[in-house]
Image (cartoon, rainbow, N blue to C red; front, side):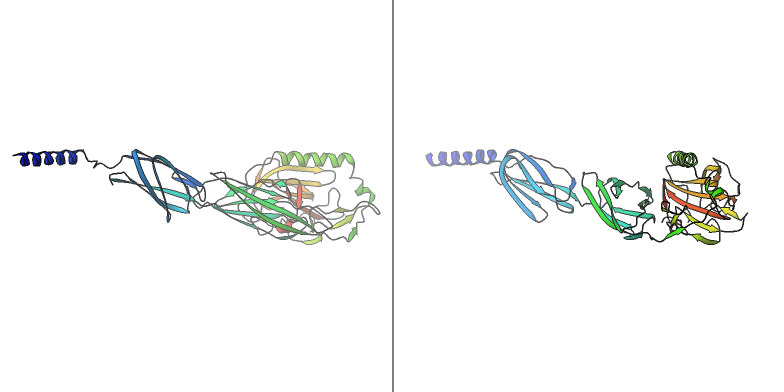
Length: 372
């Protein structure tokens, strides 16, 4: 009887032990960012309702720790990768959690711009940005240390800058900076070499009666008219087609040619292109825009200025007649006036300029191109 009693007691003890043995896996809580810059530190916080052994597997690496609450520090791998957290308690019960962390690569930036230009040629800039999953927050540029406005044009950003006149070779830096949502910046630099302008000086022979048009008052007037028109220019481009030559004719004075108006006087550089043609030849608008100057002026003579938007302006001087008025929208190829010899001029011709803001650029660099 005593043996039977002992056996019954032992069975009862085993039954109670089985009932009391921990068979429930630990309750697991985790917290981590799901989207971070590639290569950044990722803090993975894990917590269980009891002390456990944690094993974290991520991107081919494995980390472990014994704790109830713990912070693992991971390095964000490129792309989307799974993080597997296994928590095992002292009784061997395990809980598994899975999450993904995206390591977002930096953006890729491609800058297209001429590496060599002649001083005075316009610099066209095209910036292509591939986000690689990152949202781009800003795209900015400088040229020669000065801000170069960029315009979003479909999948790219575009910019146009005037290059300065100079009789010595020079180099100017184009710097493009792209910033993404994580505050990362990617910078691309392009060195633009500027060839020197010619130093051969043309001595112009101009009658005193014609030179009399050049007075400080006339210069100040025309400078103010141009500055006011530029200041009120449209911020967005008004053109979508290539620029065209306003007339056909013989080039008599090239852009940036060195010249003296008076013997022994100062040397100046020609801001435009002179094209000889018979008086009365129709002059066409180089592209779509709005007329911002139209009238007779002392030096420029019959002068039309067209705002093409986004800081680009075309100018037409010395016309005998003007066929448009301020505020009028014109289309590429529309007749805006007639060739003449008004103002500071020695014969019938058109002086044509293409300017970025107030800065002159080589007009021929625009012909047959939407962007220089």
